[in-house]
Length: 261
Length: 283
Image (cartoon, rainbow over all chains, first blue to last red; front, top):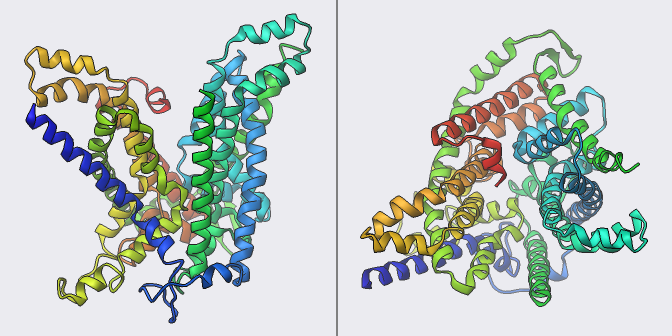
């Protein structure tokens, strides 16, 4: 028994070690957003400042890139959630002829490497003479997020009690009324989870975007482009703010879910 | 009308996947057989030799990507399994907190996390610079631009995708099964090897699948951490597409990469005795 307890304690410490390792770059990112750097490079600690928070939007093309990322994430999330929820409903609730093929397509979209997805989209756009801009980026982002929404919504729908909807219909609700007042509210947690996931996937994407962006620059693309000349501290600050908002939303979501349960 | 409902619901998403996933694959297959140049355009000539040429030029990088992907996946398995094990069996009512902490990096952009490592590991940065100042490391010591940096970066970036599926599989294991094995005089190691490990294999399978494919095809870690001597196939595909505008070579390379990964996945599934790859991966 003693040996077991020691092993458990070692594993506990080890788990924390891995967590620290995983979090180390985040700490560095946050810390160097406060670095009062004098030279061009931001690699050594030179004192504390809030200057970069005050001058957050001083680099105009970085600000444009961040705004592009936010707009693209928002638009592609809306499209993804609508299409994904419909497809998830169809797959989770109904029997139809093309179901097998559709399931396969959904799985294929999840398992295609990002690089191949971006390369093949570019092949299509080049072959069909489609100009690359924010629209092609949105098309690509919907493509790689769609399956995640479908899978999340489908998983929720198959657990739902059909008799609730039947009761609504018996009480005279129309098909649309039943959907709006019974089905939609009960799948809402899955729809929201899918929405958050697709927003996160979109705002984070570099690989696929780099193929189809044309001259539209997003936040990750701008950062990679700036690696050679040095990352300005404003990037750290933006990363820190995105991190903070993301964690807040996740924690709030968990608290709400716990209250409901 | 009711019979049409599923078709109407599925149609828009289905169209999106067909037009932007399937058609592009066909377009890429077609482009990969064309010849020409960036100025005059490319025309279909069924030039299968594009594949031979592309492979001839980039076989080193393709092989290197597979090796790096495999090394990183093995490292993730070794590092991640004990974590998943401990959280699943000993996490108690703090399980979700530990999982949340493991997922914390995902709130920071992938690119930014990788750059942070570049930053942490810089030759004269906060870590090695300090150690060099103290005389604990020789002045020419460096990690950036080595195999270790790239494989380490890949391991770091995809580790949670390895831990989560293993955790899910282990979480389903009934602790009483393990107790029963021990009651029947299995040692701790024996109970793990003959009971827990086999039950966790579907999770290991899913984890390997979820990490090996993206790690092998990832261009970012090699680009940011690898210097010039560690380019992976993803970097070559990007350069051929976006810088050289040599679409046929780039398409042939992308197809080869996908084919190699698919063959790898199926061979792996066969070796592990999993009957249905799709099913195991969907879990």
